Structure formats: C-alpha cells, structure tokens
Image 1 (cartoon, rainbow, N blue to C red):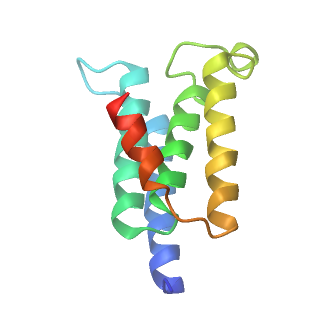
Image 2: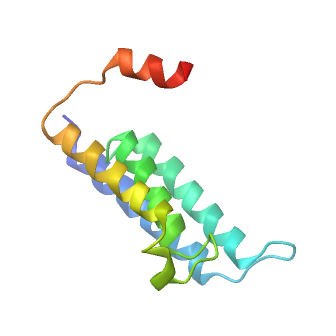
Length: 116
C-alpha cells in the first residue's frame, strides 16, 4: 500500500506545476499552448514517478487535461462534444472501473492490440 505522504507529495507537486504553466509568462519562442502542454507533461512525469494514482489513470487524466485546457485548439463548448473527448472519457471510465473491481491486465488482449 502506498504511504499517504507519498500520495500527498505527488499531488502537491503536480498541481502547482500545471498551475505554473497556466500562470507564468511564456519564454521567447514558446507559444502559450506549448507552455501549457509542457506543464501537463511535466506534471505527468511527477505523477508517474511518485505514483499517487495508477499510471493508466494518470495518463488518461493528462490526455483529458490537454483537451479541456484548449491545447488542441478547441473552445470548451466544442471540446466536450468532440469524439476525442468522448473516446478519452470512455477509456478513462473503463480503465478506472476495471481497476476498482481489481481486474488484472489481459495479456492476450494486449498482445493482440500490439500486433494489430
């Protein structure tokens, strides 16, 4: 079981990293969207290293943040209705429910997906 300190540390570092990407001025040669995408990427690295959430949940959450923070160029009202958001949300809820019920990864399905 993960220690509570490790979970809180990971979240306490990742959230300010994302906020910093949204609030700090952008350096020369980097667009606003690039700054936000970079902060989400670095927050994902922090979360993967400290593992306050399972790796799959962290990855899917970061993909959702990319859609919802308009990095992909959608307005929020358009982004929520896109197939990218719907697919990501469906994958997120499926993965989360699978982990909650304690399901182990299906290696045969993984191999089939890699081959296809």
